[in-house]
Length: 112
Image (cartoon, rainbow, N blue to C red; front, side, top):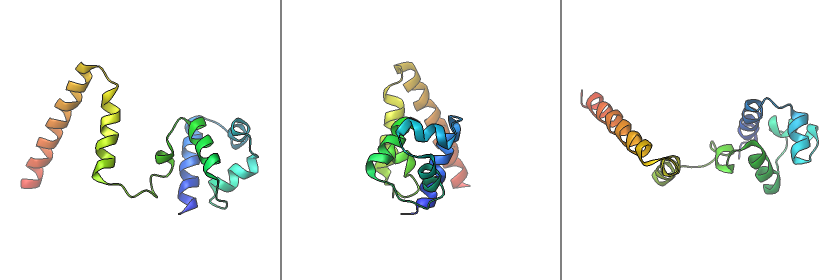
C-alpha cells in the first residue's frame, strides 16, 4: 500500500471542500497533525479513520483507494451502473445514446 498516494487523494478531496487540515481533523475528531501526517504518507490509518474520512468527504473508500485497488471489468460496469440507475429514464436513454456514439467513433478510429 502506497500511503503517499492515499494521502494525496485525501488532500485532493479535502481541498475540493475548501477545508483546512484543522477543519477536517475537527470534523472526524482527530488531531490536525495526524491529518497532515496521513496526507504526507507518513502514517497509516485505521479502517475506522478511513471510513470516517470517506463519509465526511462524501466519497467512497474505493474512491480514496483507487490507485491501490486492482480493477476488473466488473468494477467499471458496476460504477457505470450506479451512475445511471438513479437517473430518470430519459437521462438513462441519453447516456446509452452517448455511449453508443462514443463507442462507434472509437471503433472507427481503431479500424483505421
